[in-house]
Amino acid sequence: MKFADYFNEWLYADDGYYANYKAIGKEGDFYTSVSASKFFGGSIANYIIKRIDANKIDKDSYIVEIGAHKGYLLADIIQFIYTLRPELLKTLKFAIVERYDSLKKIQKEYLKNCFQDAVNIEHFSDLSEISKKCGFIVANEIFDAFPCTLVYKGKEAIIKNHTVLWEDELSLYAKNISDRYSIEKGEVSLGFEIFAKTMYNSFEKIEFLTFDYGDIYPRNDFSIRVYKNHQVFPFFEADLGELFKKSDITYDVNFRHLIDAFEETGFKNEKYSTQLVALSEFGIADLLEILAKNTEYNQYLKEVGKVKTLLNPAFFGERFKMATFTKNIS
Figure 1 (cartoon, helix red, strand yellow):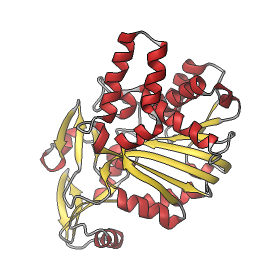
Figure 2 (cartoon, helix red, strand yellow):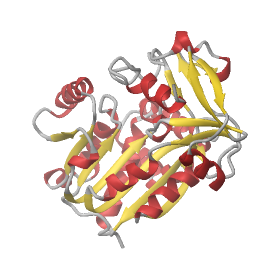
Figure 3 (cartoon, one colour):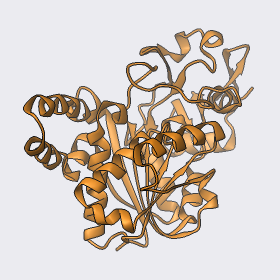
Figure 4 (cartoon, helix red, strand yellow):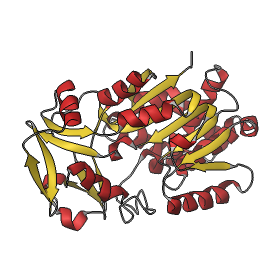
């Protein structure tokens, strides 16, 4: 079996890891920025408001999340928009792109509990179903879950009985990407180009914001790993048969490849930065100042502690990167 097919089956088969709801955070296998603090979504909400004020995106835009898990991030964005600029909830529209019906049901129930009938959230199974005027699309940690292949000194990985073997030649795509980015050892992501093209056609005017772990240049080493109960298992040392479909498999994103895929589709890469820089520019300190004026000091300190996790260079602050892409936004 080709490694990309193995990776895809691990996460996306009918009984794959992502096919049903999995807890994230303390009760799950790993933490994300969304599980760390509501101010992650709050900062994005503040950024959306800034972009509306600057006439970059429309007041009646679709705010769309891809890879919404239970719906926490979109709910946080909506809640902070309500707090900061409630009149926008009368004009903005909200949607989730989710392929699994089981997760759609969980998302609908969670968001219904959050907002009752005050906010309507649409669901799409794929970006290709969307054809709208203006959209702001957000995704947190989706590209690290795109199927990939593994390359090593001109060879490509296959899997047999949960064991890695190496074919003598690279596939054409793997060779083109590994040559382009000088990858002799590591992961080659699949699907960036198709994803970018599908998104490009989904709205007349788009801003896409994404966060993920990785770097602007490939490490030229294997980053692929497995998370289970907050333990990290290096892929080549793990018991793959035991962990298959029961744990999260992931790798570092090659942001140079991602940016090139979007730019060659027609998008403009507006910015690439660390999460620390991005959330600071989005105004996370201003949001904490508002909180300080409207809550008890102990609650304020509690939230500050959570936000430090988002910004701390030793945690999410430097390890995670942010990229924004636009189409027809001047």
